[in-house]
Length: 208
Image (tube, rainbow, N blue to C red; front, top):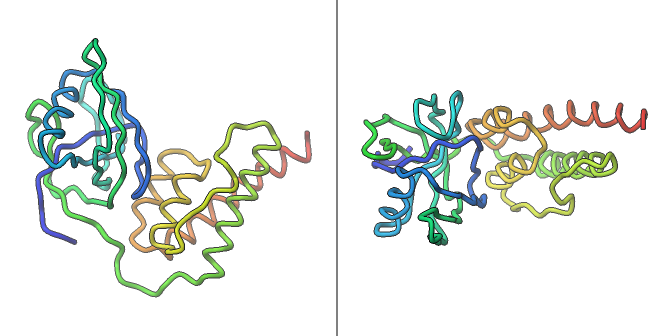
């Protein structure tokens, strides 16, 4: 892991993956102040999933594995609310939560994948194909799904994060994938999750 740094934090009800796009609509005073401070600095902040609780008002229980993000664009509305576009940069681990200073802060470290054997290309392409098949089945059932002709990185380290973001799974399952320490582990868990989801879709398709 990298050096410890202090970072403003945004607990959310979603998981932001590296390279993922994050639209935000800020109306709470603490986060309106946060965006002003970010725009005056390096525009970087952390995003973590709220394990329990609400995005509004504080008092939430937060995951400690999240994403370092950067503000791409921010616009203030006449009523003081902000529309913000951000992108995920890299995975981080919270070393220590700090007392809130208007908005949440934490000491964080970068969290790259642990060293290990590379993902076999055939395994990576198999899980890509499994997701395309699952999305096609859901589309046939009339479900709103991600575009099945998606593109992901050639590098399985980043690509498995992108697949996890696209997969039609529960947010806490997405966090489980996100916390896997190696791309090989994400491939195995993705195959398992997509396989279970495909079984349900196949049953629904046979009954339709």
